[in-house]
Length: 66
Image (cartoon, rainbow, N blue to C red; front, side, top):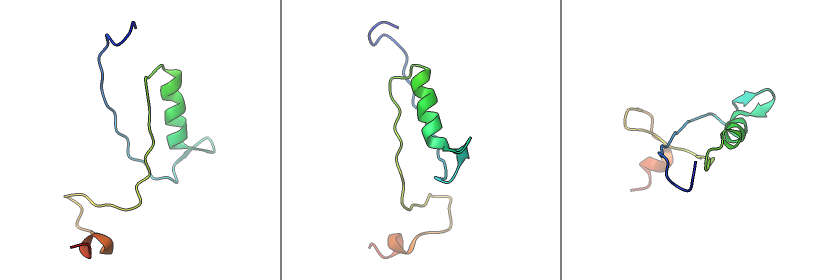
């Protein structure tokens, strides 16, 4: 790969922080493997709470924020 003459794509993976792989957090293993495979970047974001359009449960924080 020379310079930035390559295809780009984004992969999003949602994991529970408790998921592990060989006694290591799974998110750390995914970032490590991405680096080993030559990906340009990888990021991990921790979500504290949330809900989606199809999820009937909403947090009390979201309900009280209006």
